[in-house]
Image (cartoon, rainbow, N blue to C red; front, side):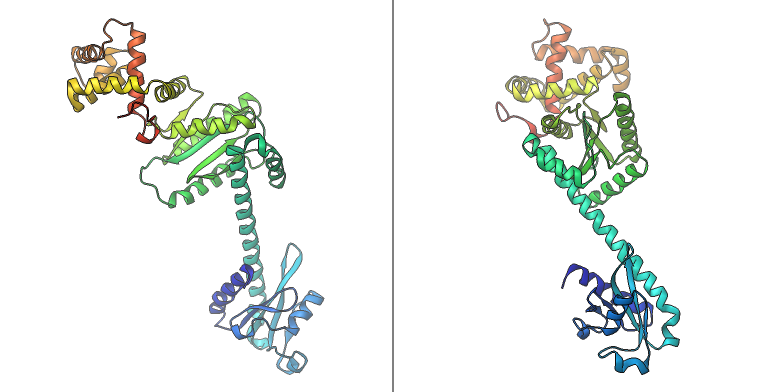
Length: 389
């Protein structure tokens, strides 16, 4: 049984209950019954349906007409139109007086149902094509340019560089499949609000997260669209977002995806945007820590924990983090931590002494301590094996 026939069968069985469990048949464009409440009739030829297909008009079969319509029953048979084309016939059993009032309603109902089915299938096809295009853009690059161009044509989509990659993911740690439905609803809302544009933006699911490739245009317009998108995400109060630096060609898209993947695995807040200097600095520090500074950072962390123990080491690092977040203001940091200013200064001095940074400049101290903080901000799977604990 085809998928269409299966859906038609589900339809007739559900609809029969609404019309007093009367017999309902659906015939295809050849007049063959493909769905029926009398399942033994599926596959039979229906003469009344053939007449409907030929004339485009409803056919009423009365009891006295049955000899002219072998294998049929009395009732109404009506064309199913979709986009001004007959795609089939629906028939309902009963004498004229019994079914005349509901026959036209049934025709409208079945037409709307199949129209909705066609729309759903079209949307599912578009979503699949967009996901395929997204995968090629993220991981195929220049080598898949021909296929990318073909898919863009099928979707009537014109990509404009530079492109920003936005990775959306749940704030909650525990993941479930419901969030994929929530993503779809969010995307629809963004389209309705003209935040996303089907003609130049690519969006879809990748590894159970939602990825948006926000198309370019004039710099001012691009920034306005991005700001509006991030505002909508923050308003939802459910999602986090990581934003890549601008990708100026196909080759840079895969690099942009790596950027947002790294940001996704950090504890960096609701919105992490690489166009913001603070976020860019943390990203670069994290990359440096993993690629070149892993042994140095691990050595510093061991020294800190060996001398002060795990809890106090954590306390010292938290104090340093708030101190730097407050721009080096002792007063602001002490107020935020609910400490006396002298206590804060003492903790920072302990940190400098333990890490042997006392004789260094303020820049050097902050550089190494920020590397340490960035290391602590990474998931275990994102740390380089070299020099790891």
